[in-house]
Image (cartoon, rainbow, N blue to C red; front, side, top):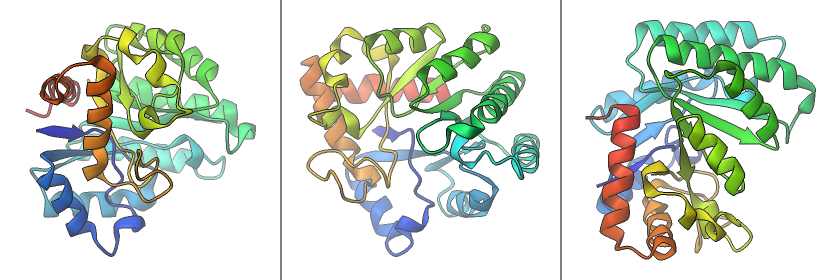
Length: 256
């Protein structure tokens, strides 16, 4: 069994063929799906999908950094808190800092990130971190909020070996997806130096499809290509990648 620890299966990209997409994943032995939040406008779609597949889907609550808006951030964070109080969520995410699209909200993004980390510790939940062009800013907040309750996953990890070691020091797994299969992805060059106990698999579907589907819509069934790439990098059987990454994900998100 494989677990896709980060997939937006509820998104509009799958409106026409969502059932077929899920079936293709199940046919590849990918039968647990962790759904990261974006903002309140997606909440209903996420929980509708959970209602349709209660044993397969696991829901996060959180405010995505690119959706941190000065006009709505307070309302959106209230919505996250409400989800934590009323629903059975498995993590807080995806949260973090994204300076690629808009650096003008950096301080606000960091504040929202810190607040959601504090809630994660309060509710004993892992976090799923989104970081784009913002390693320093993300690590700055993690340093401020660090204690023995902090845990989670550095989603779509694209950093260097030093970034990887920093993330692991904060009790974070590395979420490895399609980027590991890209020629210019670079993480394949040092990944073998990171023990598999620190790795979970993800697709970030519908984004970042692995080779040979790069540039097309990603889907959870493509997780198998990421797993095969890791088996090649680590020079171990695919079954070993399956066993270790699945156990890591189960422990992190308490999926048993």
